[in-house]
Length: 155
Image 1 (tube, one colour):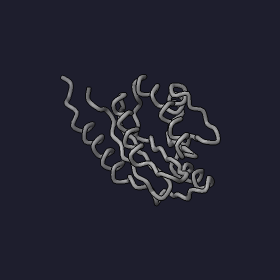
Image 2 (cartoon, one colour):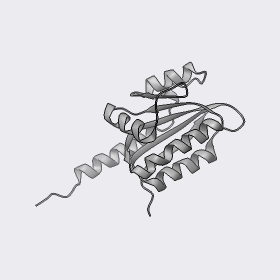
Image 3 (spheres, one colour):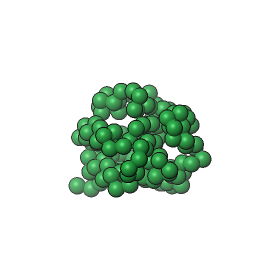
Image 4 (tube, helix red, strand yellow):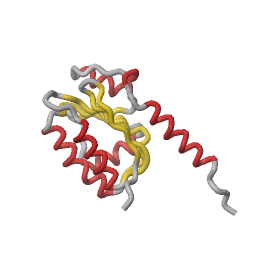
């Protein structure tokens, strides 16, 4: 089965930035988690900025795998998870299907700026200017626009 979904993962100081785009299947979700394990900071507390502004949902198996992955990260040094997920409906679906409820370790935000403010309040300074995936976001959006503009006409 082919991996579905696109992502970038970078570590900036003690902030792991994970940007997801497109639709994910279980193999895609597992691949993101594997890369997270390879890149996560070791031997010190850290936080995660999960940028899901371009995420276009996931299948049920993919969503159901997320809670165990999230819990593992919290047990291994992650002390905060800020998820940027604009749109009330997508946020509610994600929260319901993954058993995610906002708490002291995890918060949901509609903007990158608000997520950065929260991470900074936890003692992990990070601003939108520190965000390392702007080029990935631009390329994904350009590809989406290209695909829409070149969609074959229905006759």
